[in-house]
Image (tube, rainbow, N blue to C red; front, side):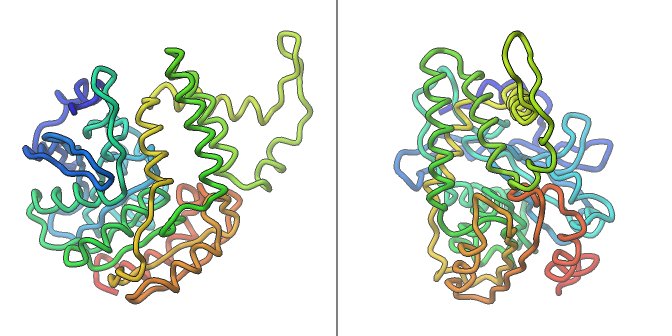
Length: 350
């Protein structure tokens, strides 16, 4: 497999261990070896795109998000930063107290190796595979140990997989809205989304399929209460048919997503979520779980059961949010005291 065409376009901007005006460092780590995959098959010489911000001698925190997230955790000239509400100077995850490492997911739409139109079908990717390439990246960067992995949604699944497989490389993990296995109703919704994209790809219109799949997905990310409060206005007539406020919102979100993400990458990582299963009994790393009571994709009960199954020290925080599964992107003040307690102040161990 080769780098995706999107990745090729970005390579000129990614020099290995490159510096920048804002003090960040980023690079493209080439494994130069075959990478066996958890579900079978392999990738030849995959590359992993990464970005590191924060004081060079501060404790390292790896920040991983949903399948759309990548190495740009904080803002840069190229990207607004997917977690800019939560990570930054003085933010709940303080980039002045910690080094923050982000990476583009394997199989995603960034500069890390992913699906390529000209290549054979991309193999199935597991959260264990993401954990494997993260472990190799850590060694490549000559980092002895990670202070913490803070993962939300798919990133939380990767954090759990890493804790099971590479306990010697991390002191603690924080998993937000991520369990040890998928919720069947959530798999049902995602299965329909993938079917929409696959159908559109077969018709040579992948972006339109991704637009519709993302619109459907947005209805599952947020809470019913938020939609009830925001979209109670009556429909209007447009071009001879009724158009609903919630419809316009969802399709606008779909348009934005389809303009910047590859349909094949969406299918790959959406499937990876539904293939996810870790053995919680093998997780001995101190683990903090954060559950959102209104989360439709990862129910509170699933997070409670995971907390009971983990062998090592485990604590569960429950928060409430109008934003449902997307709370990790929005709830600054809810996450601040939890991160402070778990990660320590100014990078000190808790």
